[in-house]
Length: 261
Ligand code: PEP
Image (cartoon, rainbow, N blue to C red; front, side, top):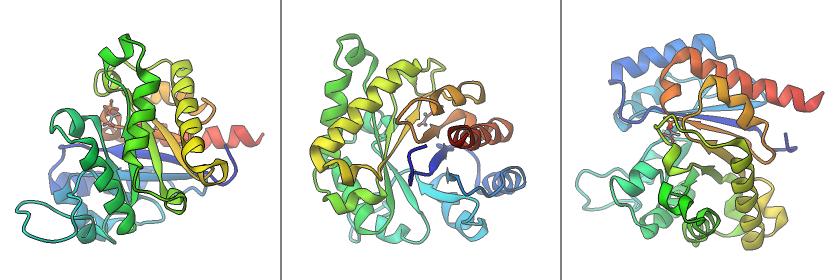
């Protein structure tokens, strides 16, 4: 593990679990996953469950992330929730997830504005970037990653980078069971770190954590956590299985203890 960068495991529950089920599931995870100094665990329930879970959660054990929000702070935006309203409820915000980019047609401008809104309201952004299957087949992965990074971070200063998390999530690997090869992840993470250095310099970039996400299972977690430059995982489907998710968190802990020996 790179000194100063704590491992990070994020569970994205997507549009699953009722408020009651989410509360029971949090209770179950609390019994299974111990507080560890070397691994930070973040849970991203649906918006509806976020506020009640914020009252239930032990923040030493789990942090909470919002899956989506609108980038303006207040105003006549019926049906929307802002980062200003989420301040002190959500610790992190998932931004630019491929399901938001592709199913809800979020633009690069929306994503950039959300990153800025999160930072403005002291919520840590988890910016998701990644290529589609067709971009991959045309050999465009590295260009896509650089473009999405440059665009998503356009409004940030190097001071803002301290709380930033980047999730490399190849679109073709999300929810498909078709996960990326660790050596490809290594290549992508290298491109991401080099681009961050190019944009902000080596020192500012050191604090940024880079995650892999895409059909991670308890059986594949260790392989990704062993990739140089990977600081953790963004987990969708497997985060809804308490046994699998607990195993993934354990693998993250083991990866830091192995790194120390
Ligand atoms: C995700 O939701 O970001 C994700 C990676 O999902 P899954 O693990 O199900 O592919």
